[in-house]
Every structure is written in structure tokens, then in C-alpha cells.
Figure 1: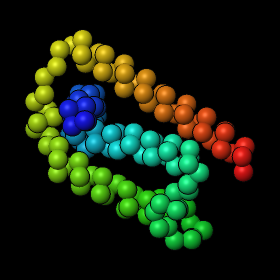
Figure 2: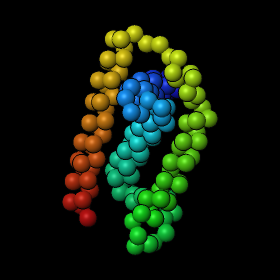
Figure 3: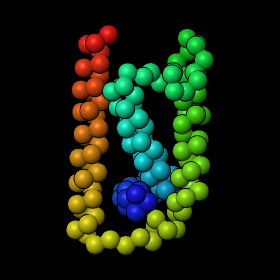
Figure 4: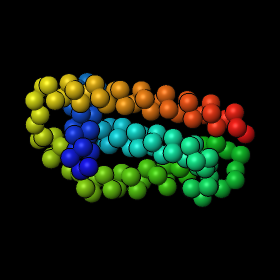
Length: 131
């Protein structure tokens, strides 16, 4: 599992290391990886009919930005801390893969992200119709 996470981080790092995000490519790679994790969590919560406020102790407030801030505090900060603790930028940067593996990995990653969005839509339609 750790090898897979490193490979996905490498793919994102390689993608973000070119262009305007080159200086923050490792941060962008971790952010992208955590976004994929969050999409998976949303799907599982949706399948089991659990609201995000049942998992994260959100305060009942009318201001949506406060809810997003609380979700970021409960999810993103621990996520970034764990990722920075276990996956070092130098190690990810120095990974070597052949071009075929990189191309296949990029294709699989894009396919997986598209599948995640389709799954979110399907779960939303199915669970939304049951309420």
C-alpha cells in the first residue's frame, strides 16, 4: 500500500513540477492525494447514509464557510501532518519509473478519478431518491 501511495504521489509530483505550481509541487501532490481520499470517504458515507456532520462534530451554524473551515481542520490538518511525516519530498522526487509505467499510472489515475465522480453522482441519485 505504501508503494502505491508513493507512486500516486510521484505521478502528482511529476505533473505539478512543471508550470506555475513547480515551487509547491509536493504540497500540490499531497493536496491532490488527500482530495482523492476525501472523495472515497464521501462515497462510503453516502453508501451507508451517514452525513458528514455525524462523523465530524460540526457546529450547527448558518455560515457555510465555517463548516468548510471545520472540515478542513478535522480532515486536512491531520491528513497533511501524516503525509508529511511518512512521505518525504526528497524520496518522492528521487523515485524512478520507466515511461511505460508512468503512462499506465497516469491513465489509471485519471480513470480512477473519473470513476470516483461517476460513483458520487450515482450514490447521490440513488440515496437522494430514497429520502
